[in-house]
Length: 157
View 1 (tube, helix red, strand yellow):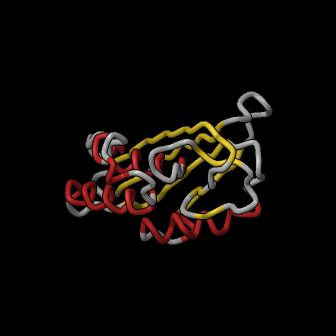
View 2: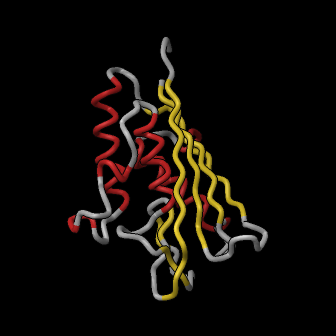
């Protein structure tokens, strides 16, 4: 690998009753609250989307899929990620995403039981082997119980 690129992304949403919670493209039916967002509010996929774009200085998810556009209302974040990946791949030449590492902060529900499904979903979306997808889960220790936050780094090579 002669050239490497690293992209970083971060996203957060306030949680509210009556909303579904989706993280990494995986629905969490036991969640009693979900994100207030224009799209489905998948904070993990939004962070990965920003990381894909930032490696190539292509802006962020809001620049490509603005929340002022009614076409994106309730949008599936996996579709937004695929669109951003297409844009990033066009800028990348021969380079491809090689690894993703992400951290999700959420107090409830516990995410550990969903680690495999979330990692597999990210691997499929990014066309990566499963051992190139790292997903870590944290709680806010009660400091921010009403939000979900995600951070992601994508290595291109």
